[in-house]
Image (cartoon, rainbow over all chains, first blue to last red):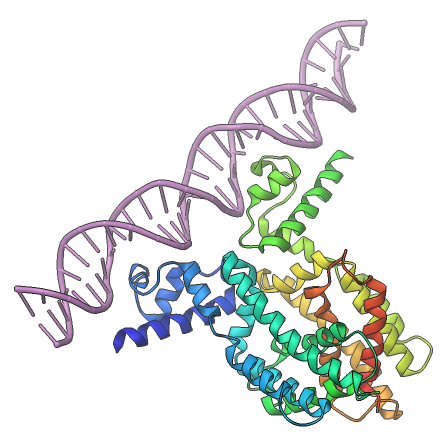
Length: 190
Length: 190
DNA sequence: ACTTTTCTACCGAACGGCCGGTCTGATAAT
DNA sequence: ATTATCAGACCGGCCGTTCGGTAGAAAAGT
């Protein structure tokens, strides 16, 4: 009931503020102000500032990781699958800009165990791409080359959209995702 | 004389520490410890923590910006020039990993005027790439497409190397730069 | 040659302020 | 009456910053 909404509101405010100012520069007071509470009252919902940050990381990559995994092991040629993966990934980034910013920027403000989890997720994402790239290369669909480097190049290109995309700008999320999916495939095609 | 060395040492320590912990999480005490001074003594060399950060940004992009500009307006086909630009850019990133990390991560810890300067530099870099891409496209060397998006994709891919490159790892700086230069061209080739 | 002053580089204590976090008594809802 | 929720004062601690002081070298005066 009300408590649930509060908790959601607190998390949402924290995410917004952490993105804008960074975790360390943000104060619990600001978050409290944003949800209309006094600082002390936050601790009814949250054990600590750090725990709040950790919670913001939890489950954030689940959805896009699942989508990319599905595209990776779906039907179609490696080219088609890679395109779908890139598209899903870019859309995942664009639809969660605040999360992505915090996820990438505050990684090392996390306690060790949470950091490990983040690294596992990132590796899982890389592995999906690498697998499809290897497969496509062995079939001759993709140019020869270091598949690890290829995956990193691709993910870099797609991750970076979070730094320049403006939600109410010239381009829709879909337009960017489509364009980048095409580029991803072309980058690997002979 | 000695003062000069101290100042250099302070900046170097600050850069290292800002990269490892982030600007706000780092304390003047740590920087003082790293150079063997008391934190109060730092203020003999530096007006404030913020000024220290600003100084770390100063002139950081000058060299690579000049190299990329030279490659952009050099001889050769757009393909060759773009390749040289990407190579120069990647090398610039790889050879200044600490600076790049701080540059990208602490951008918005800067006072407004310094932030403006950073944005100008970033725009200048984008413009160089965009110009060559437009030229190559009009000559038919590159595929049709949004040149702004192309530049952003390319720069994203190349900038992202700072997140995964390990100086004493498997790959030399040159190997990565060469590989990425090739990928950059391929991404735009029909 | 010897004394005195000036300057540089640094010390180290202290300061005000804000931080994350705690505590308690009041309030509002049931 | 009981319980869930919150207001607001409060704490210790660390933060960036200031500042009076000083050792020692260099420069100037005699």
